[in-house]
Image (cartoon, rainbow over all chains, first blue to last red; front, top):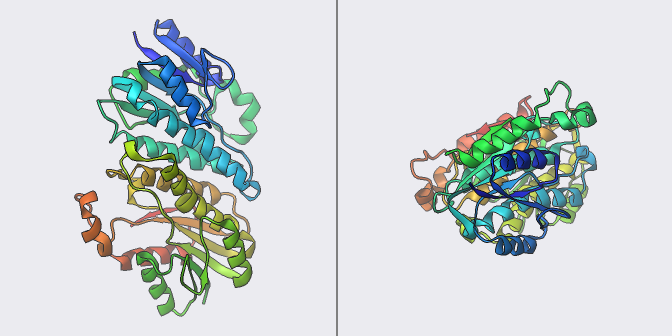
Length: 200
Length: 200
């Protein structure tokens, strides 16, 4: 059994992944900004250091967290861009780099991007930018991580759970089930590949 | 003949592009941090506003500029990442969004990424991240720009001019000529495509 830290455990995808990992009797350390076994804020790297020091050794870190601004290109402010970079992009880079000393040999990281990285949608230019950036980070970081530590990224499509809310933004996108997304996280966590972008 | 603003005009690629555009009798407005017809700093968006106000109407904006930090993943600091995002990534996003009101109908933007976006090299994780981000930005922004304005991005390989200096970092990469890179900028500036990544 593995000890796995999950960021965004109370979110839509986080709940699916947590349920699946707990069903298999792994030790799941649930992290959120305001709730969970521990709290941490991706935008405040010191809270990540504090979290890892408290949790100690672990086998995997899973992220289902991070925010980006949605607005038409003409309306996106410098602050919108800065927040998008600070949260979903740099937040996930920090949660990797600061965890490296604590992850066991052969452990893994699994980050999250999203289908807007491949398919631009109206108002999603910051999301496309950040998701592609994360995919680049994972491809390159996979080549440099020590001790057999792996890193992959999940790019989920429009979730069934959110389809009704967002379908106007995703015309013709076929929703995917949270259960399938959770299975794909397991491919990353328990598989042997590294540097992969798993498109669900 | 077109009026074309070029950022990074005195750099290696900038000189090739400028020479080619001037040979064809276009009006080339050369911009650099410290030299050129005008100076502007990608990291200081207010200098971009001042530049565009002074130049007035123009047909195309070309970027060969922007810096990223090079260091092994384990040594990259938060400041390294922040500078990489601020310069090559956000700098090029700002030079686009702030120029939109001044670009003529059917005008164009041509940005720069780099081969590390496709092929990670040791110490290049910030470059891979930023280059992919820019390619995402271009794909999405192309869908939202008004008045037939186009946007593409050039991803140059290792330049012949720089090959001796950097070849240790690029084992087996076949260098490309600056002249070919300049031709590819012309494809973007004078062609009809948008949202394209031109790999040279």
